[in-house]
Image (spheres, rainbow, N blue to C red):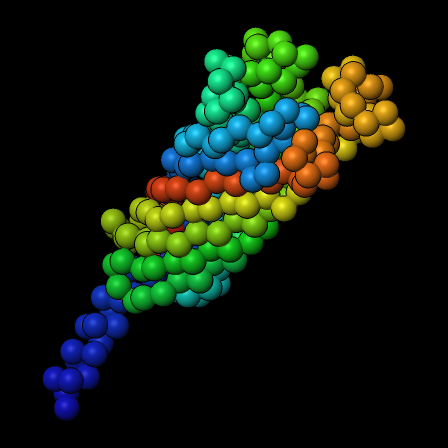
Length: 247
């Protein structure tokens, strides 16, 4: 019986070595596929989607209330947008490039009692457009890159951020997080208030109006559907536990 008790104490002590309770901070990055769900074709025929990739950089900070429950926030910058095929024989490919910064507020669940712990993160993310550009026939058949495109998009976006993976302890205070991360924006990325002659005017129902909106109806259906940003891919980071409660 005494040997069993000693063995259990040794096992418990080993578990506690890699506990995660307390404050933590770290840096990380993502390598994502990036998408615009329901493209805004600006009254042109829609183009076929093409695979588009982009990176993200993160500063993470959080607090684990126990070894299994915590919260996490921080700051991130990431690429948005979409590439399109030259699907209509025009010889002009299309590309939407967008850059965002964001603040996630995430609830964290942690599973396991060993050196490798599994995690699940979920919560809202508030994103802010920093710049945008368009390449293709978006501006009265001007095929040059339109770098003043930011006016066509909403400045803010609210979405759902979620991810899953593993925290791998290197020492009592350092651990690596590796897994998958996803973001889906619920807000419409296209600006409701338009400016310039190329914005859509629903009153005259055509291009070249008085700049009422950048939300163009589909030429196929005659109705408008909002466009949503989305991305997802690999996530990795290094974190440091900030206090002795990690022991």
